[in-house]
Image 1 (cartoon, one colour):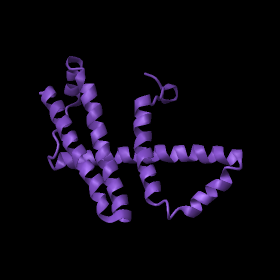
Image 2 (cartoon, helix red, strand yellow):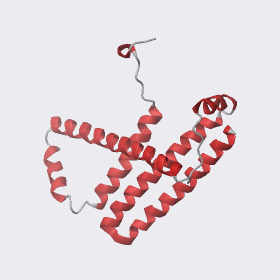
Image 3 (cartoon, rainbow, N blue to C red):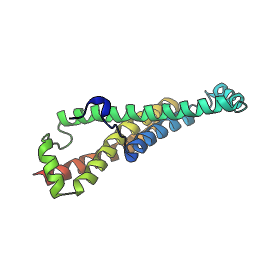
Amino acid sequence: MRSINNMDIKISTYDFFNKFILGLVFVGVAILAFVDVNNSFFRSLQEIKENGILVTVFSVSALAIVYEVGIIINRLGSLLEELLRKCHWIYFVEDYKKYNDKKKEYPILNVLSREYALSRNSIVLFFLISIVVFTRFAWYGLIPLAIMILFYISCRKYSKKIVDLME
């Protein structure tokens, strides 16, 4: 048994980009929605462009913030999953041993599980985007809300396929 100090902690490229893109989309929408409100912020960015060190610090900080926002959306997706399971709005079998055994028999379970998680996280992403859009543009918030519903249907479909393969 390895000690905690010797453990390798690895983040897969897929996992990193998944969270980064979630954060990037949300932060991008928020910036675009409030671009007129943030004029003084954008003027400050012009001053930062003249100092190379500040550009580097700002760039690294912005990338870290985007990634952290993606992690938060991912964790909210996990909480959403609990709610959907308790309300029986998605299919779910909590037998992880059976799931791992079936993964050997049906390698497609990895793809289905990944698509399920993507759909789950996209539900949260588009819910948050709809809040931002409703705040700034009233009824246009129905567009991301409709996309959120589309991802819910997708999430439900993938959960059904996973459960069917586990049976």
